[in-house]
Amino acid sequence: MAVPLSISTNPLISRQCHRLYFPSTSFKGNVSVLRATSPSQILSMKLHHKRRTGPLVVFNQTSSSSSSSPEAASVGSERFRLNNLGPQPGSRKRAKRKGRGISAGQGASCGFGMRGQKSRSGPGIMRGFEGGQTALYRRLPKLRGIAGGMRSGLPKYVPVNLKDIETAGFEDGDEVSLETLKQKGLINPSGRERKLPLKILGTGELSAKLTFKARAFSTSAKEKLEASGCTLTVLPGRKKWVKPSVAKNQARADEYFAKKRAAAAEAAASEPTA
Image (cartoon, rainbow, N blue to C red; front, side, top):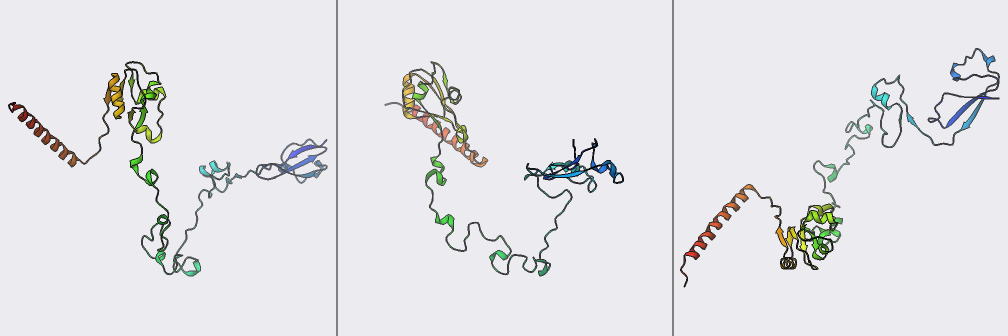
């Protein structure tokens, strides 16, 4: 019975596998340890060539004799993939030498041509320039509305109608705000809407007496809520940033007009009634 013996070749590196068959010996080991001076020990050795049908797997094996650095040792058994392909550690690419003669390939004009705007020094041409003809970004029609960049059409509030609040299951005395509406599942703002304030609209009717906290109320919603006995609280908005000098002038103007209104009110109160 033949005893198979595999040569110490990595099957992952090569696509071929070699096997040795020894019909009358029980030798188990590497072929390299066999001595050539004792051919009588090997009665009949047949080398069978067998092709592998599996995929080819290539490993990056750097010899330890060429480089003994820890970086090379860590890369020694790394598998080649598209994300780790690169030059060997320590290798350097020769820099391209321009303007060193025409025999070098990049002499004379250094690859920029002899004349023209692109061969001159400076910033070059603008993006989208097509040599003087009407550029593509000018030939295409403009988009209207929000798609064209008009921010006036973007939503400024998260709207909620009274009919939705009625069906949410609020009881008398409950608070209706942006947080409670999120907990009830009436609104689920995402993206830009997460920073928008709440606005109550007047579609529908409301029977419970609730406490509302919102940035804005529509005219119809305000009338209906006040008629039903609800409490309305208008939350302040974000103050627009202005320069310190402008803010100082605004404060002085407010103070001046406040004094003027107070003086007018005193004068009106001191006048005798006819």
